Image (cartoon, rainbow, N blue to C red; front, side, top):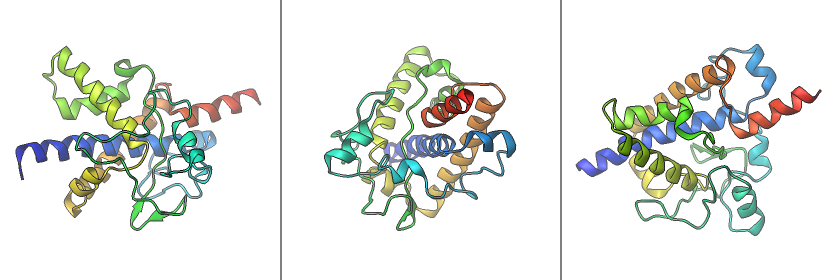
Length: 212
């Protein structure tokens, strides 16, 4: 394995795990956050069924204008359609899949924008920390945030071919699942206990509940 390849796997496994965790949290019902533990809502053992975000066409790759509009929407981090990932491959989602179900053995994760607050949000800090290390200077951190935002925008179209290949081994799948569970537990704690900004879809549902 080349040094560059190892770095790509390391970074992408962190980003992908965080993306899946944030996506899963965004699809939860506010009542479940109040009444169930993080373990009961775990994205690996309790994946969302009939995810309305997928059934509505969001987070699913497609060539139609309708799907592109749904994927673009009013995302906090700008557009992600029509771009290529940093390895030079289209950000495809390998999804000729039916929305809301598994594509082969790979589940679709709908797009949820990163928190608007950027580095001031502890979830974003937690994504960058295991990649950049504790000794990263401010310039490196800002560059890392830019890389994360760009990757996150590309990811809205699905996992890129280079990411699928890099993370496709049993070992790396286990690494991604480990990061998914780690980041979900963190995000769950931040939202439920520390009242940090939740994923956009969950935030909208929480606002609707407050109006009742």
